[in-house]
Length: 144
Image (cartoon, rainbow, N blue to C red; front, side, top):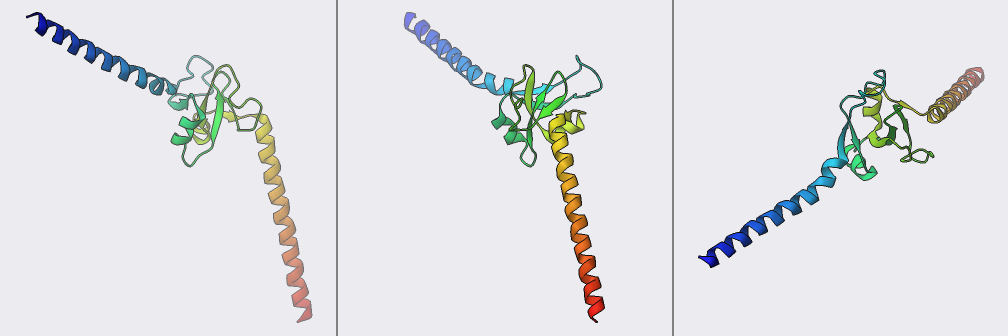
């Protein structure tokens, strides 16, 4: 009888050990995948349901065809890799840029300025190319 009791105790202890091991392995993965619900801050950001991640790697796995940004959860402003605040705000998480935009978040002013500069540069190049093409057409017409 005593042998049966000790073997049952061993089985129960082994089962508990397996349960604790599984819980310890699963806990970081569950906490890394959190839902960004910014209902406690201003309602103008409207971030309900935005998927946020505790690591850049997890975000990259989710945002396969999108840019991973660091979202300041308190302000609703996101930062791009290479910016000083990327991954460095007290309350923040890694998110997909398109999802953040849909949730009402916005890019930092610095990046917005860079994007405007790039757009303006592209427009200027297009205007120059268009002018060159018109000049070529006029030149060919005059020769004929």
